[in-house]
Length: 245
Image 1 (cartoon, rainbow, N blue to C red):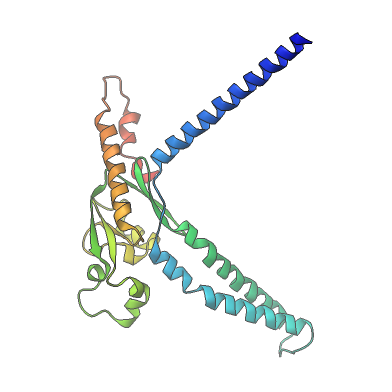
Image 2 (cartoon, helix red, strand yellow; image 1 turned 90 degrees about the vertical axis):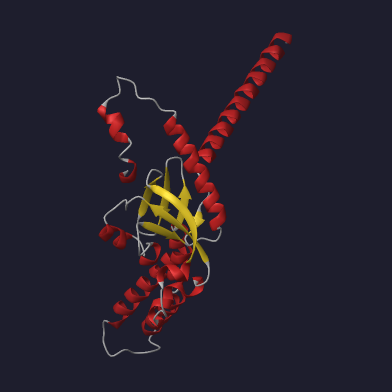
């Protein structure tokens, strides 16, 4: 009986050691991931643009689906027999747009990473290599895009941010062609005078400090790399592929 107790006790102690070791590995992995990933800073411009369609799409969905339901119950009549299908389809599309306005803001952010800055929009993900970032500086949003008195239609997108401060990324050339940049990013994210990105976020100072820390760490790691005589061409070309991954 004593031998059985010792065996059970040994198994319990061994299981506890394995559990503690596994937990330690998970904590180390989480710490390493946190070290290589910065915070996510929501892009306020996209949140503002998307939110403008939230209530109209919801009202349209309720109106169309409600009208379709009333017609289906025979409470109201429509001049065309196929009106129910059109009303129902339109309501479903409007409801889908409303759902997108709730989900899409979660996919609009900027995040420093180990070797690049990730800019995520609802339709595109752009990676800016730290080699391409020449510097960062605070800018007043209105003065970047408007030299004189802006037109009324130009104020719709930037009205909430006029007079606010954004973080400007001065770039050594565009990561994509200017035409492609204008397709995938909103024009009020692109510097109008030189290659650069205007990041409208809540905590631009925190983003600037965190980004500078990641850039310094990245540059330090590159300085410690040494290329010996056996380095292949693929390893050399890897440095020039960061913007295109």
